[in-house]
Amino acid sequence: MSQADSAYTTSRLIFPAGPAVRRRQFVTGSAAILAGVITPSRAESVGASTAPDPVLDAIEGHRRAFEELGRLLAEQDAAERELRRAPCSRRAELEAKLSGLCEAEGALGQAEMKASRQLAGIVPGSLKGAAAALKYVRECYEARQYP
Image (cartoon, rainbow, N blue to C red; front, side):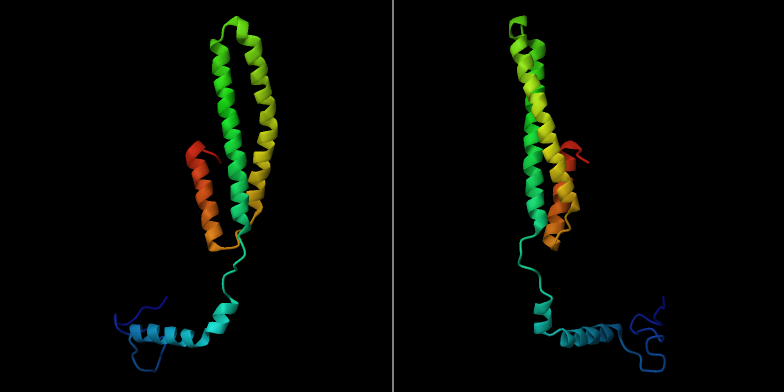
């Protein structure tokens, strides 16, 4: 990369035989040229889409499945603790309850994995969507070390 001869001029490689142009003049001149080239009609044709970002729906779908699975796992833990402390007369009832909760875990786990794959497979349609996806993944990781 070339370096300027002084702090106030552009490199001689840019203007080999020309006048010493101050960097500020070079930058503002370039900005003025770009402003003239990018007219409002061109800027509008490149404008952001107003359609809802599909990644936001995927985030919400995964959030619901993840929270529902979390509630089920918490309920399983509570039922298991209760079973360990329960008298023999209630053990059969609590074992049946815990068995039902364990069976429900399979379906909810599959739904969460499906939502996770769907979220991972969607390309955000906007910068807002990309930021929301990154924020959501970070929140999941911070909350439960979710990979």
